[in-house]
Structure formats: structure tokens, C-alpha cells
Length: 371
Ligand SMILES: *[C@@H]1O[C@H](CO)[C@@H](O)[C@H](O)[C@H]1NC(C)=O
Ligand SMILES: *[C@@H]1O[C@H](CO)[C@@H](O)[C@H](O)[C@H]1NC(C)=O
Ligand SMILES: *[C@@H]1O[C@H](CO)[C@@H](O)[C@H](O)[C@H]1NC(C)=O
Image 1 (cartoon, rainbow, N blue to C red):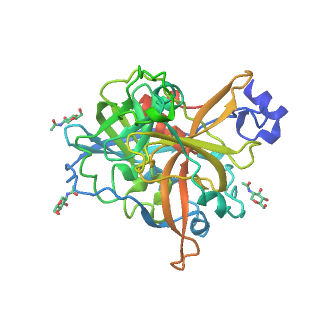
Image 2 (cartoon, rainbow, N blue to C red; image 1 turned 135 degrees about the vertical axis):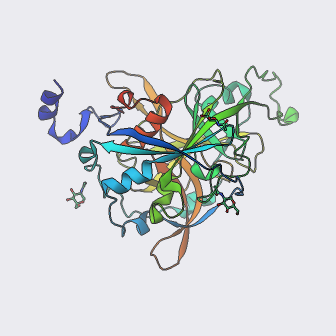
Image 3 (cartoon, helix red, strand yellow; image 1 turned 45 degrees about the horizontal axis):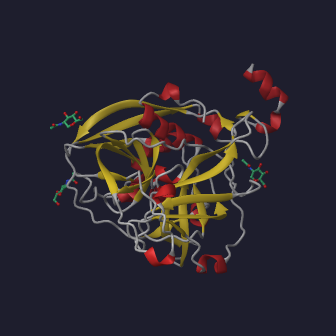
């Protein structure tokens, strides 16, 4: 049946369904399987949180790098798990069905330049009223106790940035007692919405301990070299599921080609303590693994889930899905000559990363064959 659909709709490539650019495409996803897990010595948990990353090899810089081989990818997607009791394991993985994914356009990025003036104006919205901040989609945003943000991608799994957990050499001090905070619901939004009663509502989080944390080896120093930022993501499993709806993951080949190619994300920016901050913007440049944009963001919003809205196949309703993780403001070496330029970078969820994150969440790769 699927074969017939494919031959009928050749332009869709390895998409399983091909409707229009307002609909979530369905992709066949490669299989990421566990090879083996070995114990490692306990980490020192000595790293300090980094507010900003510098010297990142960004889209332009990465264009000069050779495409990773299957062996490379298997190494980058292998991962460490750190448990609540401070112990750590290493799991190597195998990747199957990658040839289809290689048609994922290597040259999706375009050379359009950003608009500085947009970047200069603060266009963030504080979602102060609990009536909204504790409701979907804002309720999926959580605070990570190391100072970042994250997003619920299952009833008890949170997607965040790897640098919120590990600095490339060691786990952050604080990961041993890692906690995730969701916004307490039942906020009595006072009737008096007048300016006078604008005393900020006290930030109130309901904190949950993290049972285990998974970080891809591609993030670790010396593993993927110029591609480390592509692996700036991690998944945390909570001890208890907060009673909050999560947001599904989605895969999209090009955000810029969408008619309304805007991304959205909400997080806990440092300059507005305790408040959830929402913003949206267009993507300036994109590659397979990264999205560059000039959404206004401050440290603290790193790890936020970047989402877009498209229709479910065959349905009229719009559905939001997470298509990336906000990595943060970064200084990027553009031409490999040491000249640094600033960007906001988000890590895109590719079919391979979808397969890995789905495997972490479900513990069973057979549940992760279609995105
Ligand atoms: C912990 O720190 C010690 C001393 O700096 C170092 O020798 C050791 O390799 C570190 N362990 C790990 C797992 O990083
Ligand atoms: C730590 O927790 C992990 C996962 O629950 C378990 O497999 C391991 O045996 C524990 N190690 C110690 C030293 O308690
Ligand atoms: C990359 O760009 C070239 C030239 O524009 C095009 O022929 C090729 O099909 C593109 N590759 C992919 C995978 O989209």
C-alpha cells in the first residue's frame, strides 16, 4: 500500500504522506538501537553553568566539514546516562535505514541575511497571567534547576539543551540534584487587572526530581569537533509525571519554505525572574541540524522547545509540535578565521535525532518508526 502511494507521489521522496505545506508531513525515521551499555566511573559534577557559548562552529563553518559517516553518526548518537544516585553508564547505538535519510537536503540553507533591526527590538511577551501560563501550550514549558528551560515531550520526559547539564567535559555541579519545575496551576487571576495591582505574581513552581538524564556523545569534547552544537540536547526522565499535557515532537525539512515559517518558544529568561516569556520570529538561516534566528532571548531560555503549528493529516485542526531545542545566544566562527558573529541558535530535530529522542522516551525503537 505504501509502495503504491510512493510511486503515485514521487516528489514526496521518503515522506509517507504528502499533502501540502500546511500539513505535518509524515516521515519514515531510521532505527536507533541500543548495542550495549557499560558502567562508567561516577562523574565529578564539577562544571559551572555557561551563560553563553563561544567559538561554536555554526552553519557556514560546518559547510566546510565533510558529512559524517554512518560510523561517526553512531558514535555521536551513542550516549551517557547519569542516574539520580550519581552513577553513570555509556550506551553505544546502531543506526539502521539511514540511506533514506541522506536525501534530507544537505543544502537546505540559504544565504539570506538577517534583519538586524528586528533583533534590536525586544519583542518578547511575559505570560504573567496564570490563566495562560498554566495552560497549553505554555504549560509544557518547565524550568530546569541548573537555570535553563525545557519542554515536556512525554508525560514524564523533558527535552532541554545539553549545555544545561554538561559543559562538554563534565556534568554541571547541580546535576546530581537535578529538578524540574512546572508552573503551579489554579492561579487565581485576580479580577483587578488594573495597572495598579501590577505587583508581579510570585513565581511558584512545583519541583520534581529527575531520575535519569541522557546526553548524546556528540556533545562531548573531542567527539564530534565542529559539530558539537548539533548535539546540544538532552532528555531528563522525571520521577513523577507532572499532571500537565506534553507536546509531541515533529520533523520538518525546511522551516523557511513554510508559508508562515515562524518558530515559537517560551522559557524562563533570566531578566524576568520566575516569569514565563514567550516569543516568535522567522528563521534567518537553516541547515540540516541548526536554525539561526534573531528571536529575542536572554540566558535562562536555553533549552526551550521550539515549535511550529501545522495541520494534522486529514484534519482541520492545527497542531503544535516541537521541531527544535533553543540552544541560545552564541558567538559563531563564520569563516573559520576567528571572526565571531552573534546568532541565536536552535538545534533542529532531524529524523535521526527524532529516532534517538523517541527511543530515550519510549525505551523501544519499534515505537519510533514514523515521525
Ligand atoms: C574527576 O576529577 C579528577 C581530578 O581532577 C580526575 O582525575 C578524574 O578523571 C575526574 N573524573 C571524571 C570521571 O571526570
Ligand atoms: C544507581 O542507580 C542505577 C539505576 O537505578 C542502578 O542500576 C545502579 O545499580 C545504582 N548504583 C548504585 C551504586 O546504587
Ligand atoms: C542541493 O543543491 C543542488 C544545486 O542547487 C541540487 O541539484 C541538489 O538536488 C540539492 N540537494 C539536495 C539533497 O537537495
